[in-house]
Image (cartoon, rainbow, N blue to C red; front, top):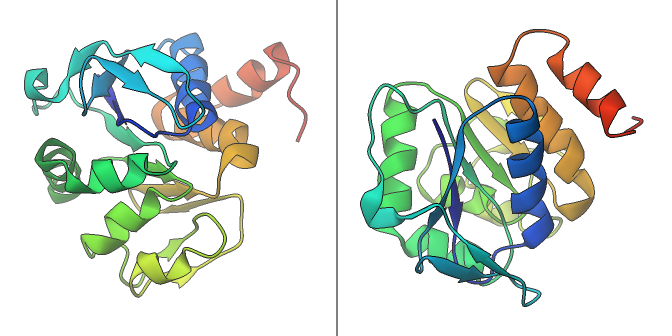
Length: 181
């Protein structure tokens, strides 16, 4: 199970791209509405979440948590006890935690990026709190995966597939969606 958290004001492309590509790769991804079952993206696109934050279970079946960016969605993710609890749970077990755009600042605020290489939306690097800030499209440092924004959503999703799936899966999937690096 993978939880992809959604809060009102999330960036639609940063959420739907990894959701779509991970499901194409055969992964069980559940969208989790932090602000309700219907979650409105930052560009006015409503999404019906698979479940709400009070319905999630943190157990050994949880493979990854994903935080899309967007404003004010990232602020709402940061304020959510369910999100912070899931991130802490995964961090304690060194299981994959992924965040894109402004959302790596949630991890930074939790002091999970200290000494790690991480990336985020340009201009938000101060929110990474003692990380080695990178301008790379995607950074993987241990069990934490970060990415920069809408324009890096496909490389981000493919990196998540690389972490979770057998070798070669992301290359085959990239070819099937006509993505060229």
